[in-house]
Amino acid sequence: MNEYPSILLDSAVQQMASLPGIGRKTALRLVLNLLRRSPEEVDAFAGAMTKLRREVRYCRCCHNLSDAEVCPVCSSRSRDRRVVCVVENVRDVMSVENTGQYNGLYHVLGGVISPMDGIGPRDLEIDSLVQRVEQEEVGEVILALPATMEGDTTNFYIYRRLRDTGVRVSQIARGVAVGNELEYTDEITLGRSIVNRTEFRA
Image 1 (spheres, rainbow, N blue to C red):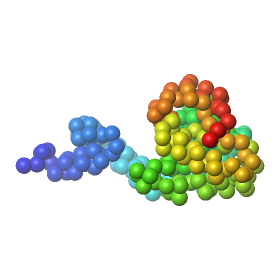
Image 2 (cartoon, rainbow, N blue to C red):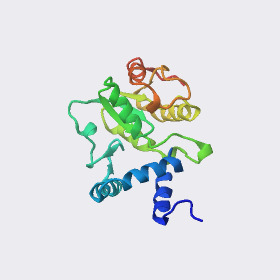
Image 3 (cartoon, rainbow, N blue to C red):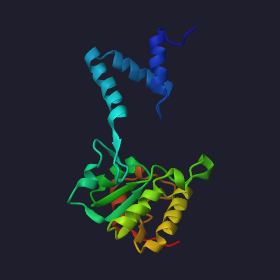
Image 4 (cartoon, rainbow, N blue to C red):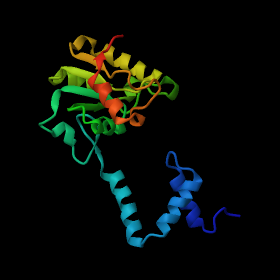
């Protein structure tokens, strides 16, 4: 016998539960909430998700999410174009922006080097970072990757790739606890870690 009184309900719950961090109980609660809404509201919800997946872009400069070919940060004339902050993912861009302590550009790697997960340097946006440093007037690259073994490995790899370019390579201060992801770090601590960044030493 089916767990739910409706096959349609069961299918919707399965889809909702496929999202990270959402179990079947939470999925059921969310689906039942959608059922209480008007058809117009549900259509708007579904339409927003579909439009997001089909039309969202990645900035050709920094690989952050964008509605256009170049994101608002990269196209802004008020940003310090001499400084590039390297982060793991788009969530980290949002976290750093929320500190209000940084006014440079970003470079989103799309992950960190993790041999256990089959992720190597070629799977990340490291080559494009090196190209930016070589082709643009970048004076400093800030490594703002997670304080984990994978993050440190990626930091070291990037440092070696940039060592002969003459650019200054720094990393955020260890106010971020070892093992922590940037998105879970409070804004004050993260902001101080950026302001008090130190020169990267292999």
